[in-house]
Every structure is written in structure tokens, then in C-alpha cells.
Amino acid sequence: MLKFYFAPQTCALASHLALEEAGAAYEALRVDFSKNEQRSSEFLKINPKGRVPVLATDHGILTETPAILFYIAQTHPQAKLAPLEDPFALGRIQAFNSYLCSTVHVAHAHMIRGYRWADDPAAIAEMKRKAPETVAACFTLIETEMFVGPFVMGEKFTIADPYLFTLATWLEGDGVDPARFPKVLDHRNRMLERPAFKKVVAAHN
Image 1 (tube, helix red, strand yellow):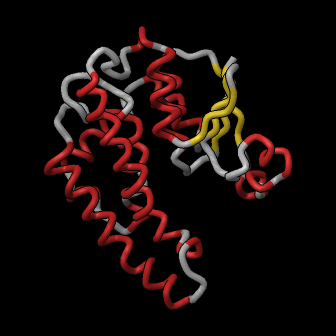
Image 2: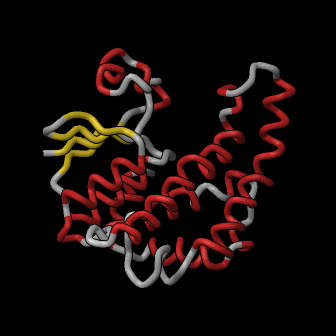
């Protein structure tokens, strides 16, 4: 059985949602960041990065949200979470998820984890001040150019949907009004109506 390590208020929510949507057999293991469990020697043996998500499989450990999402789609083809038979369509999903990982999440991190990039308190404060602007710019691009509708990539739910949903739940905390992005906000609200999302979101509270 798969073992999935997660912590609330992290991007691990996306992979957790995908596991549930796929109907996967897995055990969810909560990592308590308030107790710094992600830096414990036990957890660092599992993931030396000291972060979540982590998916322990029969073949080894996987980390990083795009990789885990793709693995779930590949190993549960019956769930049809990705167009595995269409290389270009699959590439578009990978491009979208890579943008969320490499750009949107990083913009968000400047709001609360500026210490990763600077030691100067003034520099950290400036990153925090700038974060709402950069996060909003990311979501403007998603809203106007990348989101197809009614799901991220069009008519079918894919592994891009739980990932966008997860980062969209951070908008208010980033000082960005989600009403500025009606497509993204509508998507966020509709995803919360899905049984798998209700179940997993409750587990992350």
C-alpha cells in the first residue's frame, strides 16, 4: 500500500486530492510542522529535503508535487486523470503543473518564507510586500491565458485541477482578492463540491 506524508496548509493537498480521486489504496500520515517533525531524523531518512508531500511506493520514495501527480495518473489509468495516450495534451498538463510549481508556489513562498532567499530583515520585508503583486500577476496569466474551462484543461478533470485548487486556496493569505479571478474562483468553489475534495480538505483542517 502507498504511504502518503502530508501536512496541512501545504501543497501536499494537491497530491492527497489526486490519490482520493484515483481511488488509490493508501495510508495518509500527517507530519506535524508545529512540532518540527519534518526536520526529525526519522523523517529526514524518508525525505532529506525535510518537506512534504512524500509518496512511499513499492519501488521507492517520490517527492515533488508534479512528479507525484503524474505517478498517480500513470498508476491509476482507470481514473483518467491525465490523457496518457496523447503526448501533446499530456505535455500541456505538465507545462501547467510545472508553472504552478516553479513560479506560482515560489511567488507565494516570498510572502511567508523570505528567509530562504535573504537574511536582511529589510529584504525579507520587501519580498513580503511584493508578494501580493507577483501572486496576482501569476493568477492573471492563469485566468486570461491558461485556464480553458470548465476544468483547467477543458472538459475533463485532470491532475491539473487539484493542483490549481490547492494554490488558489492560498490567495486570501497572500493578500489577493480571489474575486479578481472569476474563473479560478468558480473552479475553486466547484471543486469543493466533489466528494473526494470534501473528504480530503476536512482531513487537512
